[in-house]
Image (cartoon, rainbow, N blue to C red; front, side):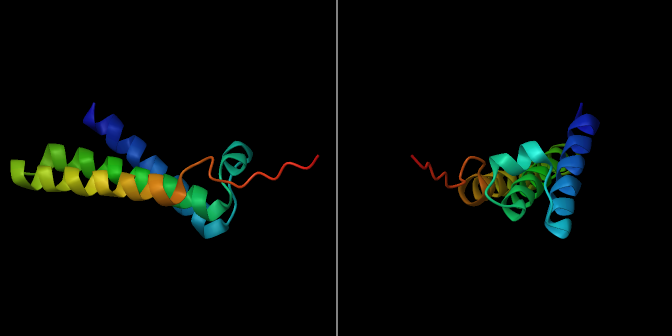
Length: 94
């Protein structure tokens, strides 16, 4: 299970980095975020958090694993606060 979770984290991180580098996001994702930068940052931070959590839980001692977990939670908090989907401003014209 940890290998699958680490792979998911790696895929998310690479996907986010690709969006940040190219400045393009796939259609469904682009509609959920206000910019490709926000979409890329969100996916990159979530992917890094998953990787950090899985690697910390499987490879490190208990104290180091707890520190890795706290850092992963902090990355998720940053992603949710600064890059959350649905934060795009919607202007309704009537």
